[in-house]
Image (tube, helix red, strand yellow):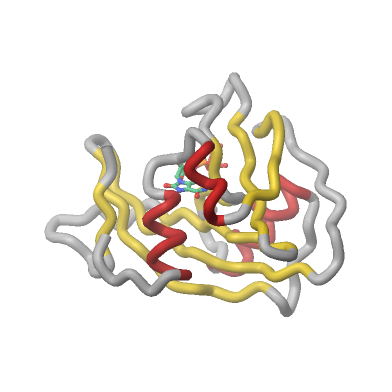
Length: 147
Ligand SMILES: Nc1nc2c([nH]c(=O)n2[C@@H]2O[C@H](COP(=O)(O)OP(=O)(O)OP(=O)(O)O)[C@@H](O)[C@H]2O)c(=O)[nH]1
């Protein structure tokens, strides 16, 4: 159960910041499957993770992309915006990025993930996604302003 807000909700704990990225190639973007020894095993999501202290969102996003996929993002990494996530036990801010690739990339996964797939927006529904993934996609790419 997750609630997503465009503006900061009342009594929001903003101490946790997460970054995530839609990595596009052709008409697809990449989803990663969380490994069996991770939180939420078997759930699929776009690359991302928690920001570390003293990192900027861009630094955190580049680090996570490299750790999780081996992709090195430079000038082409763009920030799309932020959303506020409220789960029963935790609040966090999600900073969402996109990276458009022109060449087919070589992907090397870390131990955090067991597999990856390139999916079109329509195929997203076939995956057991991290809650909120479809809403985040719609918000940034289909200009749907209500979550
Ligand atoms: N990677 C990723 N995480 C997301 C997305 N959406 C979303 O709510 N999250 C949440 O953001 C958090 C990211 O945490 P993580 O466990 O992947 O971060 P991390 O790699 O830094 O892990 P650690 O510091 O616990 O080792 C998780 O609670 C995850 O459910 C998403 O699209 N991608």
